[in-house]
Image (cartoon, rainbow, N blue to C red; front, side, top):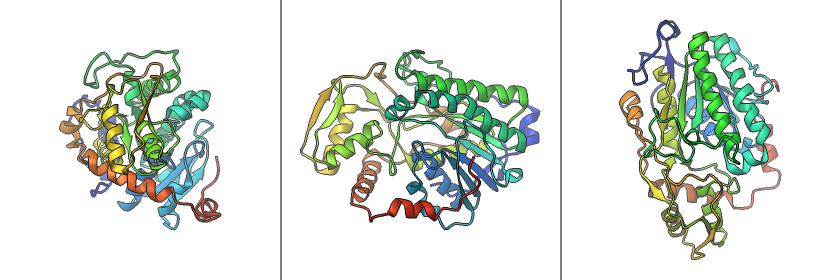
Length: 363
């Protein structure tokens, strides 16, 4: 995680002029109170931990449709952390609103399993949920960061994908509820910056992995690890030649917080530039888990991208950020976490963890 104080930008300076796409970050100031929507999810919970560790008060807002309070167990007894169970699509009112100086908007189903199960909810959180989070930032003068996705590039015709690439997306396909939700959220964020002067920015997150992923969420790495630990063959789509670039979650958190400090409008790609084939990922998971179950081929999902790798030169230049965790090291940490989590929990453990969280008003 990042060791530097969490910071955002001076609002008067930011609102006085638009930052160029590749501009130099403005002088930072400390963040005292942050709101993290979707904070009980995989990435969100790591962000909550990092912010609290760096001295900020954090209000986590999550409706738990895909998040899990188990992810927040380490913060249960911290007086700087408050959990609010609420749906940001319906509104966003948080305790201590007048002190909020950073809004990180991550709320959204993010895995194929979840956004196929919750298609309308996914579209709504990208539209109404994003607007409510932006309105909170507008009321408080807070820095706003939208957690967008590499899915806005669709099945790209440009490789690697730079921020100036507009994408190749099927607007009515099975993945469109997530792709277009994030594209609309980006347009809304940019409009609030231009028309309302909100200090708003966009990061585009590429494939990320690590502890707290759910084994049944449909994403490649947690699915492979779960299957390998269970002695099941790994389900590799197609011939496995399609590529992904995978970033360890600690690196991503460091990048998001660096962007939050910068005052840049974005979009800025955050991901690991090392490209792996799906077949290679499967082979590495089998080796890391000691599984001999092998692989089984399944049909490629519709609109599944053939290649995916970020051009991260803007993040390197403007943020001084680069993913640094080697794939074998990150995979070993992830497998170790899955091994611990697959042990049978004590009866009542999830409920007990939830009861210990300091809760704000439900929205």
